[in-house]
Image 1 (tube, rainbow, N blue to C red):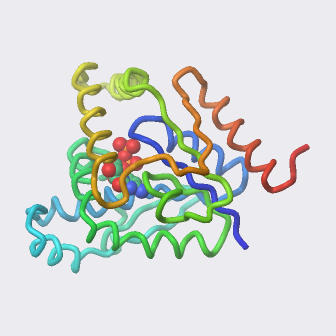
Image 2 (cartoon, rainbow, N blue to C red; image 1 turned 60 degrees about the vertical axis):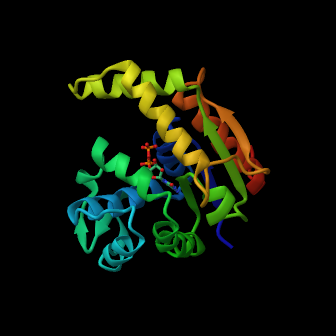
Length: 225
Ligand code: CDP
């Protein structure tokens, strides 16, 4: 049976950086489920879909196929066969992803695909509902979080490094808004699974968090030391 690791947590807690490193260290496949929601969001934006209409959303979704592939160990996400990985990291796509992710039709489309991927081999999957809904039988569940202030600071630094204009207060407000939406939606809200290990990364380095996760996996695999 494959070994499954679920990492959930709010936006900006460092999930993808840490998940990527831990997966590489462990030789697990890293699955970024947020990228799949972002690919659907890009499709919806391109079709100018009014997602408040159930019918319009259903029509649009019937024309959207999401796929995952790997090139030199890096995940690529496909929208109807097109590699859209470089196009999904914008704020516009992120906002649409968060709104679309509250729709049960959108979640249903990705649930099956995500479970199938995890059946085949050892995976480390990150998202919002992996430990609670997608892989409730995961051998290790992590709930990775950090204070709003820390998460806003990290995002601010990232944007500055990319040379983009950023206002710390606006980033913090956006994070609060996204947390609220993710935690209060009816379908698969973001919450810590009862059997998840909670890690608050506010005062931890990437190496420390990665190290803790890798140790937990080795402990559970019985391969510590
Ligand atoms: O980069 P960030 O953490 O903001 O988001 P992401 O992981 O790329 O995911 C984009 C959006 O998809 C999030 O704001 C969530 O609302 C949604 N999502 C979800 O609902 N369930 C998942 N398993 C993954 C992402």
